[in-house]
Length: 415
Length: 142
Image 1 (tube, chains in turn brown, green):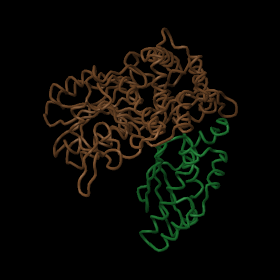
Image 2 (image 1 turned 30 degrees about the vertical axis):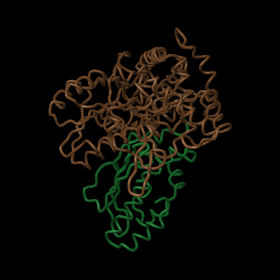
Image 3 (image 1 turned 135 degrees about the vertical axis):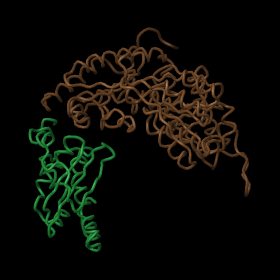
Image 4 (image 1 turned 45 degrees about the vertical axis):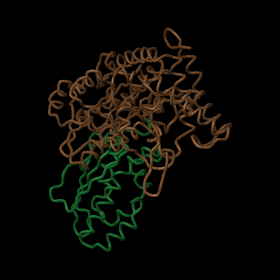
């Protein structure tokens, strides 16, 4: 049952036992590393526990009752995922280990079949390494080229650069993140997809940072591929999702060969299984896929538009307060309409790792480093940044604790 | 705990590093980085009859990694190059006065020692491969 109004954060927090943990000898945990992975509600932990306690079994093959129950629960998750992103059918939903593997699946299967010498793949300077390295591997294997769309000083992609790239008629794929994991920038993917489709170019959307935080509708967006991860949206680690439009998926060669992805295997040939199983070789991560269903239910109950509203509130407050601290440099768009709940910053000459150590003394978990986005770090001309990222259970009071820790860092470093 | 780490002496070496810069006539130069943090250290050595005649470092990264490198250069200046192999984790932590670093931050403190040991091995690899191999095998933490 979807709720209305602002999120009841107090009620939500009661569902996350880990939030009561003490850090650094007695400080209450302030978890602000949600862009890396989110915490898990009891419902998810219980669903995994229930599977192992009551119906642990391999899926799809055996006819005994445990296998039947496990198969039904596993496939139920696929239905929920399809519904969550509004895919046309469950046949378009492939389970992988993570978003990284999902993108690699596209590069390995679709990419090897479709990209040839001198072809181009267009990505951007704000990509996560998972949306850079697979394309470097593919283009170097094929003698193809990798091209980058730039980012401006305010953290916005230089959308006008697409036209020049796309008009060269050598572009085979556009791959772009929906939301930067460093700057928080929300990319106007609808425009990019439209522009690309007008030239017959398919588009992959890295939804790892967007699907957990806002309503995403793959049919409305009209993307050809989308990758995201369960663990960044209350679900367990070890579950990634690849969405592929059916007509593309039907023509893709298999990824991992082995059990479960076949119909018939003979000595020298194999008939592959139907979609989506053809792309899921070997025993999948059954328990965690089943756990993921509970995460989707949890988010569905809250409603993704309300999740987004909550994060806009927190982000506004965080930008306001952090930018008020002397010596701070903030990165990314200032307008919260154009960004998600990810705030990257630096303060004086304090290295982010030193800052994260000081934050930890206050119980505050933030991320420090290059955030798997070294191309962007080079563009920003910084070695690293500190990053606070928010989710449904975070509060303004927690941001106040972050500010206290920032002031302490200033005092220690005499800034 | 941060009060203990970010003491005056660490901040002083972070902001005013000793022996920082290039060494144009270096006999050996070596670079390494810490993939987790992105800390980077280059060490340049001028060697005179097995003794470290001059040592300079370049680098960027957190206060711990950079201060540790700065203090290490002071520690080994003029010493026998081969004596570097015996330097241990505790020698470094004692040198910088941080005995209680957590596992993640210890890597920051030890990066410069690792680079220096690699430099020692590289120096002898070009001159005396057999002893270089032994130095490598004898070196703690390589």
